[in-house]
Length: 509
Image 1 (cartoon, one colour):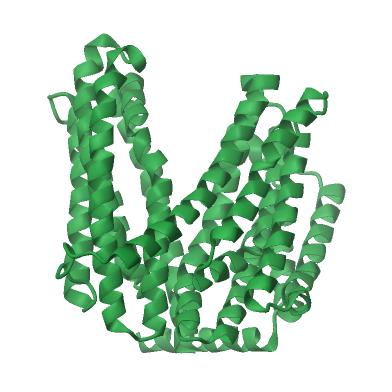
Image 2 (spheres, one colour):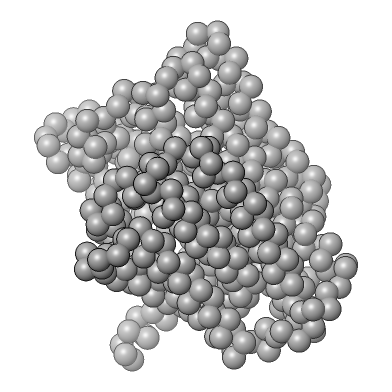
């Protein structure tokens, strides 16, 4: 129960951080845009785009390091944890140097007519590029410390550093209004400084707090550990690239057949889906260490129970917002965008259905990571996701409507879910019957109830703020049905106990 309370506390911390940083970041972006102007802001984002591309590498490496640290924490093997950390840190130093060297070599050609940058801003853009290379290095070597904090489920320090970063970025945005020198260069330099400062915060805390965090032995890496970490991260990277390739490939195919106007609708749909996926990822970030520690402790039963819980709760977390959003999408987009591009409503709705389909087995992805043998899984599931591209091309080539691409997206997601369940049965002697009974079928009751009440609201109510009624009644009914018909008895006990503990802590405070 202590572990369960930690999961709830960490989830609350991560969501609180998300809401705070999101609001401040949106305001900071507006300030920076006004201070730099559209041209300099565009130059910065063009050059800083390398950070976004490299986030896939960092994510894959962080998952790899965190998996091995959590696994050996479950085994209570402190020596192995030290070896994982030192080898991971060594590997990230090497990767950091290779990336910086590659970026600097590429920089010799990028600014010689390749990038479309005004001639009078080339020098500033070059300086920004060098700052970004430094940022990449410190971002990469921060990964082992971030993974260590997640493995220890210390989301409070992670949230603290993220909030400090966000406040510093707000301070930089305000500072731009008073500096007299080149604002773009100042912005790039100070932004790079934040990354270095974050590395110092992460490293100093971990070195002081955790005995496995040590630099002793960093320069004496073990080939077996390096091989395991690299292989595991490589296959995670393959899976991430397949997902990115599917999403970006669809954008290219839509553009090829239907032009930029349809890309606008698809881009907005991806923004909507990104917020939903972030909700699920936040919950999984709190649950994953427990899933991996259970496997490390040879408690496969608990690991599977947590994986099932992750699938169910992640689905609920997205569904209770996604379902009324699907029914009220036209109103939502009208309030948000005012001028809504054609096809945006149906694109958003279909992508939300695709995300809900993916959530049906999202916990099994974490279970695969916990077991560690992910090569075959990533090849099969990743290839299925990429299959969406030739199917989309054939559909549009034969004159099918643009939204048929996203219908094929949903179908491939469903096939990937089926394959995920089948592969996990082979890997872990997993009971498909129990999964359908305790997870999938339990999700039907709140979904049907929510869909019914949303349909009745949309069909029978007609006033400007109808969506408030739709959301309110749908969410209330969804939560009620999910609790009474969608949860197992042990999950209900967990919620009751957690609620009691939170009330007790509140009274004490």
